[in-house]
Image (tube, rainbow, N blue to C red; front, side):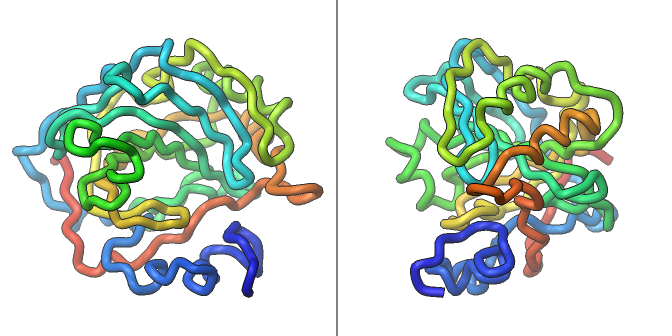
Length: 260
């Protein structure tokens, strides 16, 4: 396996990440994603509502990273921030990205009461109030806050269409284009009830630095829209599909929720 970079293939996928320089994949105590069993989650009346203040003009670019499609935001100042929930202080929006399957029956990373979804959207924020830079936040247990939004195949999602329209020029790994004036809030469901638990990044380096906020309500995505994501490529002639990590052991972590 020497010299093999991580990915989602049979030789470099999640089952091999611990062999590719990321032993935390097996040794970690708070790896993500996990299966959430709602009946076992604890209602916590002290959990605050999520408060999102996103500036659409902070969106910068969209790219094919070789493992996903990602929208990057200007996080030099508090232009787009997340507060509330279990968080202390402001968390700046840095990027959002997606995970999806080869078909509509699977693709989400988190599993809810045994149910998988067609895909999952992650909005990645970092604690710029407490840490000086993103890489410093990666080393702290409260460094990142990630909102997870489950994708359910139903009617087309108009808010998602701007991203879908950009995919045509992002087929190859490393492809990138400007992506201006995009409202990340438009991708969120109307109800922001959530489960929360301490976890990790779901891709290498798998840092255990994430406060997860998994939204209860999924958003819709059209089957045709999702099919366009599958036209992207990990590399030449390698369709970008099944770019998700399976659920990891919860290891007695407490899952809380702000709804009954």
